[in-house]
Amino acid sequence: MILAAKNISLSYESTIIVPELSIFIESGEIVTFIGPNGSGKSTILKALARYLKARSGVVYLNGQDIQSMSTKKVAQQLAILPQTPQAPADLTVVELVSRGRTPHLNWWQRSGANDYEVVRWALEQTKTTHLADRLVGTLSGGERQRAWIAMALAQSPQVLLLDEPTTYLDICHQLEVMELISRLNRELGLTVVMVLHDINQAARYSHRLIALKNGTIIKQGPPQEILTEELLTEVFKVKAQVKTDSASGCPVCLPYGIVE
Amino acid sequence: MRNNSVSTFVGPKRRRQWITLMALAAMAILAITASISIGPVSIPFLKVWELLAKPPVQSDIASQIVWNIRLPRTLVGCLVGAGLALSGALLQGVMRNPLADPHIIGVSSGAGFAAVTAMIVIPNFPPSLVPAAAFVGAMASGVLVYALAWRAGVSPMRMILSGVAVSALMNAGTSAVLNIFSENVQSVMSWLAGGLAGRGWHHWHQLWPYILVAGTIALLTGRQVNVLLLGDEMATGLGMRVERVRMLLIGLACILAAAAVSVSGLIGFVGLIVPHIIRLIAGSDYRFLLPASALGGATLLVLADIAARMVLDPIELPVGILTACLGAPFFLYLLRRRTTH
Ligand SMILES: Nc1ncnc2c1ncn2[C@@H]1O[C@H](COP(=O)(O)OP(=O)(O)OP(=O)(O)O)[C@@H](O)[C@H]1O
Ligand SMILES: [Mg+2]
Image (tube, rainbow over all chains, first blue to last red; front, side):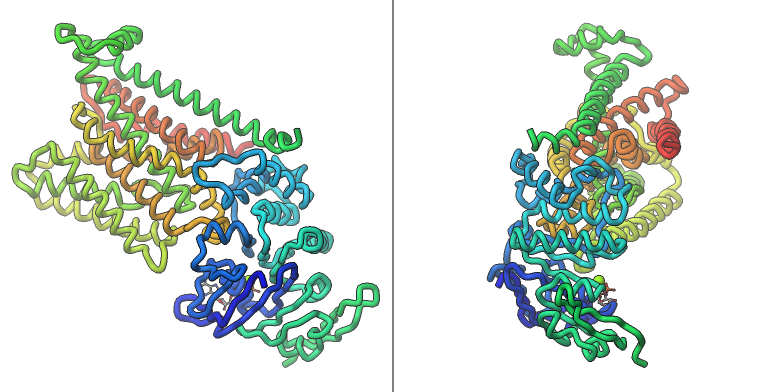
């Protein structure tokens, strides 16, 4: 178990968003949260990345309480890409990706050959080498998303948390990002925990889905097992047909109406 | 070979940064020389360095002027300018807001209120202690703004808003004191306008320890500010203790600005404009922006002081007026040039 949340409850100020929740993530898994807007997906991701401190309960990273670890130590093992990251207008892609090396450097250290090597590798993995000296602000949505993923990769994490990595992307770029994540998972054993709104993509690329509503887990398990018409009705209030894609063996859902 | 391919992307920008730094350093040296050279008794540039190369000579008037009047005044100007510009650069980074400057965090108005109160309300307040009073007022005001903005952490927006509120309060206090005790307002007004007239070695001695310590630490925080610019969540994700770093940076900015205005009076615009100009010329990488702002601030203030002495000679203008007159048009020019690209 690489990442685990035990009985965490989460809130902003006094509004409780997640009453009580336990999640266990195995090393090498791709786990995806699905659920309606405001169901607490981003909130949970923030808690797993120790940005939001749980009111009660503990998050463990490699068996250690994440709040008791030095934040730098956490950053060497876990990277998070928030839903809407921001960057200064005149930052180039290679500079952005280099920022990913921060947790591996002490404040007096300059980037060394090894850091450049990792940055080069991260650019290559995300097919952004040719964009290296472009300004982040001038990239298309898809290119920008890949640049941010490259930054997270440059952190050399074991666990990658992604909040809606495919939002704003066209269908081709969406698939590109999903393929990239899946390849990193296969080739490097990278553990991925993400939030997706496209249920078919979630089903296609995840080992496990966690369906959330109002901060509570409704159901979790492999897509083939849990993705049913009843689940979609319960979580999203939609009527949908669920079929099996003969090519991949993955479930696909076709929504056709709203439950009143 | 291959990892070079990454560092070459950084190449042109790096080069531009180094050239800018060199140019700024050269300009600073020129400005300092000019400031020592120009005055009622004009001393040629070469002669300036000749006199500075050896210890002061009692019998030589020029040597006395250089060592006892113009050098300390110029050096104080350098430190004040560097302190204000560094402070502004740090605040713009921490607040992620290009309009942040030492006034925003209440430092200047706090210094003004404390100094005015000390000078006017307390009878026989020794003038040599005015900077100390101003420094205390500035720091107290900065701490107050920080405390008011605190709510399980300080968000940049709350900090700016509470800064505006505290500044307004302090300025109102200053006006009240000036109105109630309207007899000896003249000396106070000139302090409020800010200037370097009559600044000498004892001001230098009050100033340099703060600027040296806080300035040195500030120059080492470039990478931290760079990371902070990616947002709190990202910075945390990259292993930064955001709240602590933010407090350190605001504290440094506060000390730098407080030390500067305590000696010079209220000089505006340098903290706002210098980091902007540097950013427009060579980008917002803080590892470079901080030292460049320090050099730029020192240069701008020394140049402004020369102008303040010359424009209406023999009357001296408050240098704060000149920083605005020199800074604003140049700033607008850069802005226009940038946006037409
Ligand atoms: N900083 C915040 N302060 C107060 N409430 C917040 C904050 N961030 C989120 N919330 C609230 O918490 C709830 C869960 O938000 P969260 O961002 O986790 O939802 P989500 O599942 O990620 O939704 P989406 O699919 O729209 O991204 C929402 O009701 C939201 O209004
Ligand atoms: Mg969200």
